[in-house]
Image (tube, rainbow, N blue to C red):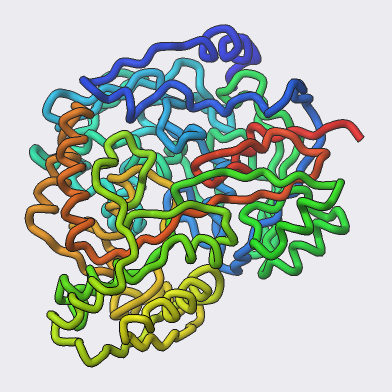
Length: 523
């Protein structure tokens, strides 16, 4: 067990560290502002107390696995696990457990060094062996984590090397390197000890230790005194309670059973904004909503039809009616906050006449009928609004509402036309999740040789200026011939009891997930 002198080290050393060394142009990928900023206002956070967070999506199969979370496991992971990098509030990666991270010139290897004196919940010091174990576990074919091999596809697992007790060298295949390692590893990159087990030995280095866990119901965590951030966390205890629907959660908030409700339903905003007992924290994010056109199937195998559908979308109306005005118009591209985003591509505007011309040229002058598959929520509302808009061009859309288990199940990539959404993340990570050349969840079946060449080169390019040029060209291809119709970006709303501090606007969309920043005011 490491003694309490570590706290002094964290206060006087780690908190003031500027020891960031990066390859050329990598500053945008690995900023130094990972730690959550002080809560809004002039109040100083106090230690002690507890919070109860209410999340939607209770699942009896939920788990605590750092590298393969199920149900609301990702939410619990913010309390349990720490990473080499973490998302800052601008949705970019910043150093966390690592004090140094450098990629070589051809992006074939990263060298990463841990801070000294870091500790796991059970007292073991965090070493290079734990980093190697964690990375190899995430990418283990036997674990079959959807976040491992899909994101770190070019990792040379057998070549990971411990250079000293705190330093590792991580190699990648030449020409397919991962200059964007922070973005692609971070979300599922919890560092766990070599004796970790997701059921029998749930140990991490996050702000809270596990006290109890009942799948689909609740999780209770207690403060980890040797957390790596000076003075944090503030609370004695954090409890995460699973709810199956927004109505039940609203009732629990009203009666004081829970204190924080992330990701509010729009129809509940008026109540929380009018109540003296709550504040609503609104965050502008890059979380996007749209439609996936399967270009492997007619009619979307014709790029003219895809362009016509994009021209039919009245984006302003969709934002107003579906997001209730809590968002902004999109341009069929994701990740606008990424420093490599191509802002020179003109905003696509609605043009029904041009859409009709394109449809006629594609052989659909007499009209077109198809099914739009969706599930309950924002997607269903967007589908209904877009179906109305498409009628102006002679397109008859039948909205097919299916259970979420079907919508996200094995058949999800077979739909001809379906709603689609993504969280607020950088370009290369979002690409791997949705329409990239190696994405397992490519509902659009977008496959363009030049596009694949450009994004592969971008992933192997440490210089952010050169990477921006590659990604800009790739985004132009997406905009011209891709299969995603992205109509809007949604703001995120959290309802917070006025007794709780530390929830602040957060472009990641996870303002309430930062449990290390939460604190309780005195009654």
